[in-house]
Image 1 (cartoon, rainbow over the protein chains, first blue to last red):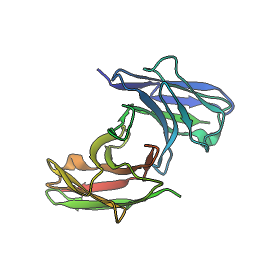
Image 2: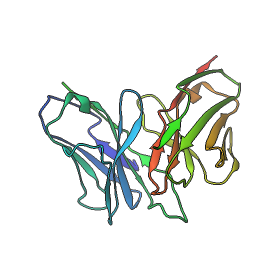
Image 3: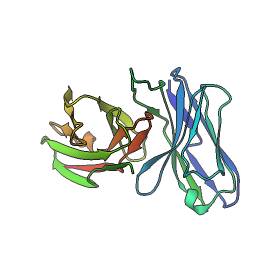
Length: 116
Length: 109
């Protein structure tokens, strides 16, 4: 069974379109994340979310919005896509990190978004 | 600002040992992670250090010096399947991971 699954794996779309990437985790984790990995391979966090708090990286344009129907799902909506949005987007999850426990994140297989 | 530095690329020979270094500067520190990422795949967890010293796990070991803001990942008995990118990530005061760009490790026969 896949622990963190995201769909689609590949997404090609035109500039200006609106698209969504879905993510689900079956690990019972409290926290989910969206990361963007650009062509230079930097992993940059976009959002982290648990049932208490949404933390947004202030550099993320407001065209990007996370939607969490329940704690096992965190979908990523992107409006008015731009060429610079082309990247690989990774969903991840972990237990809630506390001073007593800092746990690793489990990643989905990634969604390669290409905006043309 | 927060920053992670690691070499862009390293080459090593099958059966040898390689050490991948990482230096970090973060607002607060709650540990350091190493992940492995094969081309086109997701990162997978390798190790976590929060105290100074060496953590050994099979062929892989990870070292941390908090006073120096420094860590390394040591890979022994290299195998061709170890060809991958190795990502260093530091956990800051808010438990957010600050990621390096990764070190691409090329293993030659």
